[in-house]
Image (cartoon, rainbow, N blue to C red; front, side):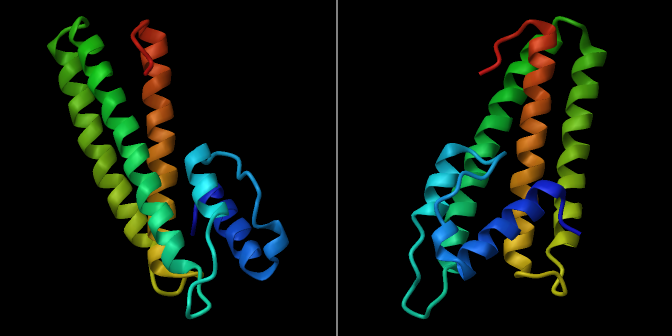
Length: 148
């Protein structure tokens, strides 16, 4: 089952395939760059928009991965002041979260879930990575460290 945000993105995107007039919408929760990318998609030579959508997804996942890695790096620096136990727990949590994300998104990419396994898997990774980046930024705020 897709998460709420990913389902919303998939439904809105599917609607743009059927009703092109709605193709220029801002989708809450997406970065402005992702919205711009999906709104610029034109129908391909075979009548499909899934190929270009995949490009947008890969770019967004890379963007959110950079955001997450930057946040983890800053949080790791801030947590070091709390002692080695906190640093160890952060690293352990980071590794466990990555394993969870990859396993859950592999499940979301199963063949019986429309629109396609690839779309679902990428949307899942984007959604969970974005959520984790937001959580890390909240932790930085609480510790008084640099958010971005």
